[in-house]
Image (cartoon, rainbow, N blue to C red; front, side):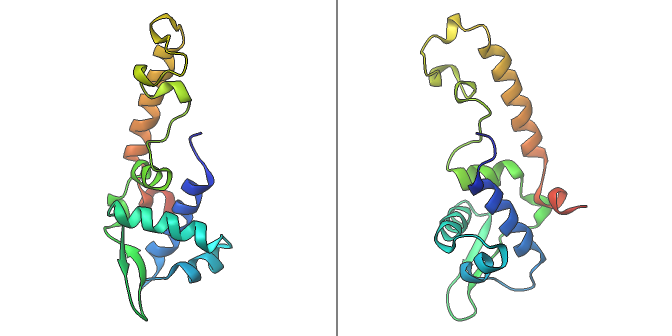
Length: 134
């Protein structure tokens, strides 16, 4: 699951917003990125609820970063866009989440759990500013 369209669109929109000198509305962003306005608006609202974006109403309203791009982790962006922590495998998030409820007998769960921990750490350290560097 790790990277869905929601996460991709969240990252793309944040890169545009980070470069903008004023708030941008969902309509403008959706046209610029060629993304469905309704889908993008939901993602933007989710990121505003998680304090990644500020939302402004009115004629000059729209969305702007709530903090510096170097202070926004890719992990936080993906959590906001997905509504949950990104997981590589369905069974990797925790023993209690095992779909077969046989975690204690599963020989690969410890490996998947360690892999998920490493990916989480990497995504927590990676920032929007890092993504913007080329």
